[in-house]
Amino acid sequence: MGDLIDDIGWVLWSGTIGLDSPIQSRVEAARAAGFSQVSLGPLDVAQLEAEGIAPAELGRSLRKAGLDIVMDPVMGWYGGGPLPGRFAAFDLEQFLRMSEALQVVSMTAIGPFRAGEVAFGKLVESFAILCDRAADLGARVQLEFMPITAITDVASAWAIVDGAGRANGGLVVDTWHFFRGTPDLSALERVPGDRIFAVQVADAAREVRGSLAEETFNRMLPGDGELDLAGLLRALDRVGGLRWVGPEVISPVTAAMPPADAARIAGSRVRDLITGIRSETRPARPTRESAEQRGEAERSKG
Image 1: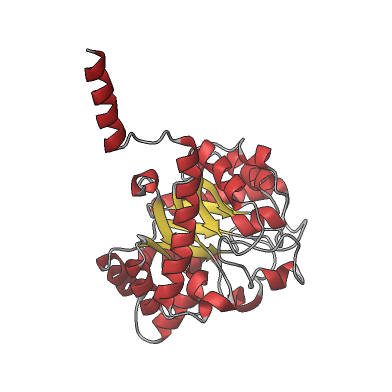
Image 2: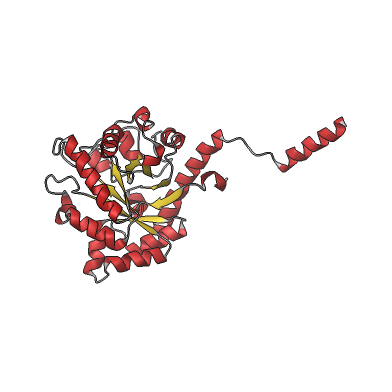
């Protein structure tokens, strides 16, 4: 049944094996579990640069290992106030400098983080500028909506991307963010499938446990929770949105596993889920036995 999903590219979103996991562990885990892209963040790049490994050298080593790079996240693209937490040390030019040196294939834009911080028109203009800057690097930009940012749902994110009108601008759909925001499948299905650049898959309990800020770091492997992942992935598949897909199970459970095991288990859960969905709608192939039986029946008629 592998042919049911061989049109999909697979991304190891690095939170699955630990946001602070060593880069070499990510590379080994991604290769062992059949991924062809891996995400890196600016903190990863800055740490290695401080250790004497230049971003360009890092990019070459990953490509030599057969992995393309997604810069995740890129912040500050909209102007606004200081970036949150550990990202406060970075500005947009640094994100872009790293992305250019790494030769990333795509970058994930997130934020703003405060409602009303940036007007809608400014967001559209700023996203268009970011896409133009990324196009100069040969990269795409996927805008991620999150219930814990000012861009809370798919409709809001698509309005910005559509308004920007850039061919290399699209969306990333994170299943946890989708269900914890406004889970509107009709709004999702109004997005052209070729503008859904990436999908991140994780599960959760039906109701939020603790705060959103707490639960986002305690996600579940697909199948261990109660979200309607199958329904969401069916909707994405109907519009042709399952192009680059992978698990993003940010959790102390997967972070405690050997990285290759976490990547393999999480990746298998996602692949099995999509295979099951697609096998529901594709006619079964005739078995050798049934073909022989039909031939025998035809001969008996003669």
